[in-house]
Image 1 (cartoon, rainbow, N blue to C red):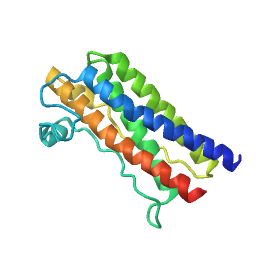
Image 2: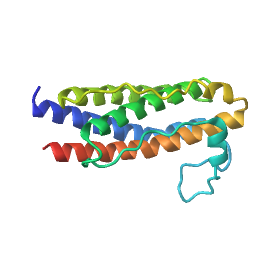
Image 3: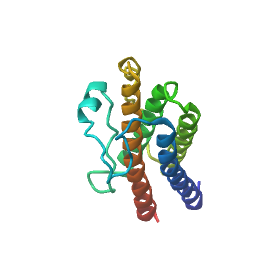
Length: 178
């Protein structure tokens, strides 16, 4: 397993992150129709903290630049855990939204990205930790269309932020390993 293979896998992972980031607005537009729920940061987006707490939508693990207190192993494990969590959250809402196929396609890209992260872990000789965030209870808390709309919006907005952090992390990893 060579450095060129690691570089190739890193580039593939970054490409998948870019695809996920470009697909999120498309999925949002096709699935979220409630007025005020927009991905536009300058829009009149509602304060949804109460709903996030009520629906118990989990937060992804934090990603940051590699440092003495945030190792390559931690970065890749947090990335993998976050991707598993978002795949599970999208699975929960996919059957309840208008355009479940777009959600399924986004989820497939996230699963592909997760496989790339696992390859990076292997190629970097980093042990993986299979931490799992339980998202199964969300389904029972989605009792109305409004809750489904809010949950889908929040999941996509948080996924976008997480994906941006993942891209920066992958770029940082590639830079420090070269």
